[in-house]
Length: 116
Image 1 (tube, rainbow, N blue to C red):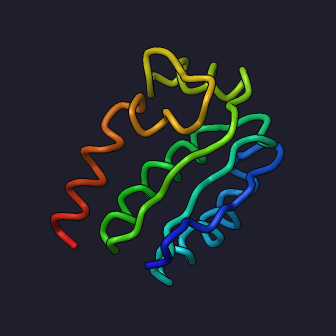
Image 2 (image 1 turned 135 degrees about the vertical axis):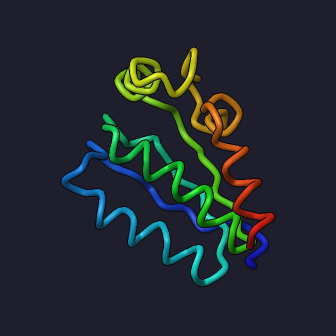
């Protein structure tokens, strides 16, 4: 695994229309053993498909011994969707805090790592 994570800059609306493309981009890093940092600075919105992708990707990376992290600032729209969807009580302003506040994100990744 690389010493420093690769960075994938996310842009615009992260929705079902882009889910397959984003999944391919994200998971290729896990398959190659790279740690990956998802940068939310230019992301404007998310939907359930992307939230599911975050959870699935976290497990996928952990199961392969890689790390998935988050960076940048979350837009108010993204924070609102995380709260409305019941994925966290209060969304952070900074993406780096996502792993700590998203319900069950760590437990699923830890479980996948144990199985891996």
